Length: 159
Image 1 (tube, helix red, strand yellow):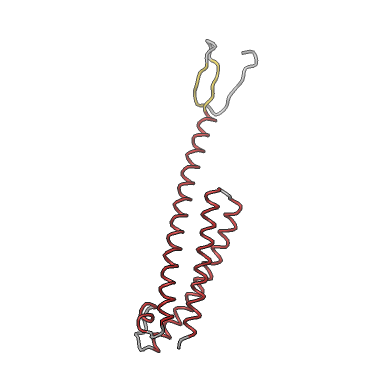
Image 2 (cartoon, rainbow, N blue to C red):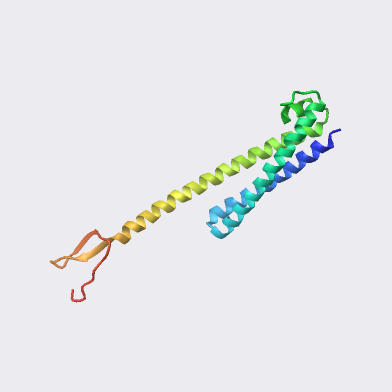
């Protein structure tokens, strides 16, 4: 029985679940435009991604060891180990990991799309406001308004 691989798979699954929960929170923060909370969430995401990457090296080593024990090629994947192993728990955790990775990827893609749309909307709003600020209404010689772009507006107190 390969308990080491089961423990490593469980830890990786837990880390992915934590990342998914963090991404769900990020979705809410993006919707509420809570910039301070988003900064904290970004730090938490970076920490979790670092832990997942570090733990992935441990997982690869355990997969190689398990594959070797099962008589598989040195480049055997977790899918190969799960399919060959007689331990149903390994196959079950492998399927849970696949589902967790798909959830994380889907949520991350959605958050990215929300952030890009927010950036585009904010940019166009700022451009619109900039045009309004740079558009001035001044009195002409006949006493009517003249509209035009200017960098500064001079006001005549006698007008």
